[in-house]
Amino acid sequence: MRLLALHTALVVLLCHLSAVRSWGLAGHQIVATIAQTQLHPLVRQHLCSILPNFTQYPSIWPSSPQGRPNTHCHLAVLAGWPDNVRFRLPWSSKLHYVNPTDDHPPQHCTYGEAGWTSDDNILHAMVNYTQRLTTETGYERDLALRFLVHFFGDAHQPLHLTGRARGGNDIWVHFEGRKSKLHSVWDGLLLNKQVRQLANYTSRLPSPRIESGLRGDVYDPYIRWILKEGLGQPAIKGQEPLGWFTNEAPEWPSCGTEAGRGLVVQQTGQSVFNDQDPSAVDDTDLPICPYYWTKPMHPLVCEYAFAHPVPEWEPPSDDLEGGVPEHPPSPPPPRLPLPELDTPEYLGRIDADKVIQRQLAKAGVRLAAVLNTLLLDEATRAVGGIMPVDWLDEGRS
Image 1: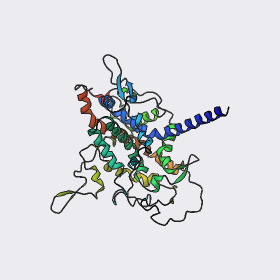
Image 2: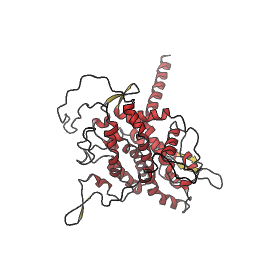
Image 3: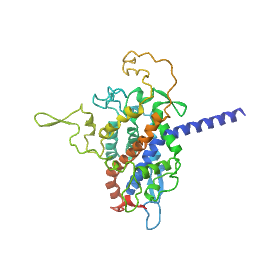
């Protein structure tokens, strides 16, 4: 009887941990699934030459004359893998975020003007793993893709773009009446509430491209909502796509028009590489520019994430080299009730301005654009040059 009770308790505990963990994965899986819906079908198929077999699934799109399903591989299956191996690969932990020097939102918001606390950060990691996706083979290429998919998600979570209070991990608040870290609120709780409260989009969209990229998850309606209401997909035949983001979304994958990022012009007129320029990370021939993309997103940290009533005080961070606080800690304020963030003042602004939806959509669209650019030629050669025509327009109603 005792053994049975112990076994039952263990099962309940494991189920609870699994549920918590799966919600923690939701943001990354949503980004990866949005990207999956935007991938060229040959790229989806070609992913199977990179990812392991357990990511394979039968896809009804594009339809074949024989009526046989295609074999595609799904990015979302391994979207959370880099978080799971942090303890096994401790060197990778610092690659999930960037800490701008002298950044203390909301009072003082800087993003690279004074440099970074370390060049081992998500900006350099995104460029590195994009490069490795083009040069590595076998398991190393598989790992590069796993990290890249994950880092696109992290880079679009605002609290991964600041070092204050370890990205909000040292600040405690209430959300829906429960005590939580500010980072956890932004990593999952805001999204979880939106997914839970969405009552429509449970029916399939008239787009085999989109529906063949969904996995039957609890957040599928949320993805349909973002694609339809946000990106205007699938478009109604004969009409321009209409959505929250349709005017801005075509520019999301762009790296801008200015040439020579990371260069300075001397009085002689010669250009030299400037290591002190934070945009220097973007000086690459790859279709990726993490600084250019994330700099306009950093204000979200100040305007939304650390907005009132988030506490201004937090424990001082330790000097990593000396093991002691860099500055004498200020005394904590008198014990006050933790602020509730599920309010019109805080959460209401985030919902009204579609902050979470925009960030997830941006990450997915940009990830798909990078993978289509890098892999489509290779994927086309692998099937002898056969490429579906107007693939993005298939299934329009």
